[in-house]
Amino acid sequence: MNKTILQIIIVLTILSCSTTKTIENKKVDSLIDKPITYDYADKIGSEKLNFIKKTYNWNNEKILILNYSQPINSCHFDNNKITSEGKKWWKNFYSKVNTEDCLNIKVLANGERIKNKLDNINHFDDKNDFLFTNFFSRKKSCFGILVLNNQGFYIQYNGHYSEKQVSKYVENLKNKYVSQ
Image (cartoon, rainbow, N blue to C red):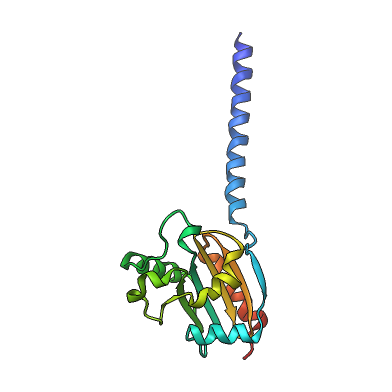
């Protein structure tokens, strides 16, 4: 009987030690850099690039970061609003991203519903549904991001995105394709 109890205690001790090691390994694994995902990457033609530059006042910056709110019918809530809480949230989000030499704007698919809040500096309507037609109609979601460089190369993602994703998109487009 004593032998059986001792064997049970030894087995439990061994199992508890190996469980601890597994948890530690999971913590280490979470620190490993995971690949950044995107939906589309390509290059747009000069006509489309010029339309975007003119419409969204993109002048001398090397990178355009375009945060897109999909049409209301693509989302389970009204994501086409501009609120002070939303502005604070975006400010905090982008405080973690290197936006040097970037123009960072927000474009709303249904911006015409709140024209009085659009300043055409930071907040824009999707003029003639150009962005929706050419980029964001390919996959339904509430949000999306389009990061372009001044040569027309872009990376796009539809859905909720992270600061890390945006940072990688900007870094890749600055380092690999941007003309001086």
